[in-house]
Length: 270
Image (cartoon, rainbow, N blue to C red; front, top):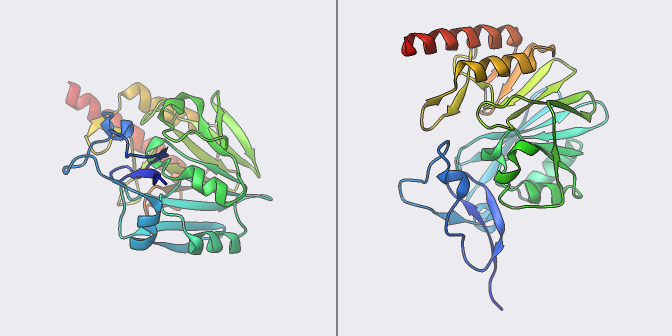
């Protein structure tokens, strides 16, 4: 019997459909916002990852469970399980899923849905959905072309906002990707991935078209991101990386960070 694989790109962590041979290329990494690794295109699979990696899992705030893979794999982001009214949502995703992770998430209450900020974090989203009974994965329709492993669980939505239950709202901000989205909780938190990137000093946020390739966003895109989140109240932002959180006055941090960014951009242009 011919062995078949669901290959995972080692640089971005995104899983591809089942095939007899690895894909020739990773379209996500060949895009100008990402890159092909210095050693060329390399692939792994979930079984190999389960042998070499593990997830560190911890409740980092009441009702917020962090899942972060060690040693670092691909981009290195974390996933967050967010408790809301009557539901749990997995915000963003990591590639590694194993029995221990599923058990820990079930102990936390399981998940009712998945929402992912942008294509760099799609990872093994279909595997995560299947592990929890085929829950929906919410992605903005503008990023449809970046889904490398199509699956029935993926639910594309359109427009600028959509409510997914429990007082949680997805907001299309654009910027990093056209369909880049953040998730707002009525409890006063914004889950931002790196659509709005929490800076290491945790007083400021950043905005970029490409982080690894140092391509800034234009002023119009930064202002559009601020306008998108302005109608929503929040004092906390959870970013893409461990400990990258702003726990007080987060909305004002977004405003002043946008102003600082635009001033710097105008100075460069001028």
